[in-house]
Length: 248
Image 1 (cartoon, rainbow, N blue to C red):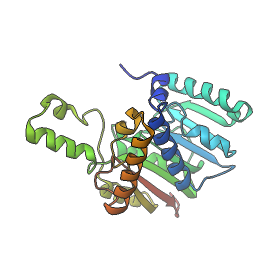
Image 2 (image 1 turned 30 degrees about the vertical axis):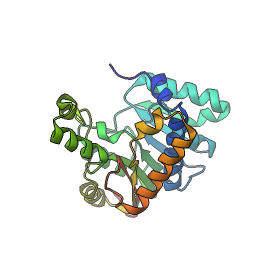
Image 3 (image 1 turned 90 degrees about the vertical axis):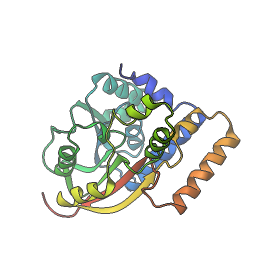
Image 4 (image 1 turned 90 degrees about the horizontal axis):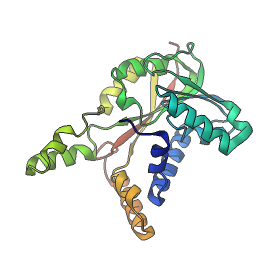
């Protein structure tokens, strides 16, 4: 059974969840260079968690998702929070494999916590590149094959602990090799600007944490880990920022 939209929002409603959500949103906005008065595509908008913050910056945001219930919920939340600005948020039931938009439609595109569920991610990358304008910015988040989940999987198998969990772990979504994806994006005429690791400390620890002091310790550990470890090592996800500098 798939998660209800309100249940997904509730995940980020704890003190640690709100912290994680805020950090993710700030990271995405920084990589998008905090665009204003632009047409932005949110590929996999879900409940509109990130899209709502782009509306604050006077953007027009088109959110796509395969689930109409999530889109209805996203519009409802946007109207509740922004009233008039919600008119700048358009939702379309669509699949990232086949975007129903013209070539070079968007000034900026982002896709967070979504591409890992695509059956054919290369087709998704092609569609994102196709609909991005010249000098447009694209930010995608990819589940990382070198992330901490692989470490847990190795330890579980090594010690024979919860074998059923080890066997099923990661089976419901794809893990990406960021270096292979980088080559794919370059072949689609996207110039890589930056790559950054996301969440070296398991997010569930933040979401379940109820103590401010412990949250500070987790945040400090995350910050130190990001500084001393390679960007891809143990990061649950990888953020890739690219720009179209040539035509399709």
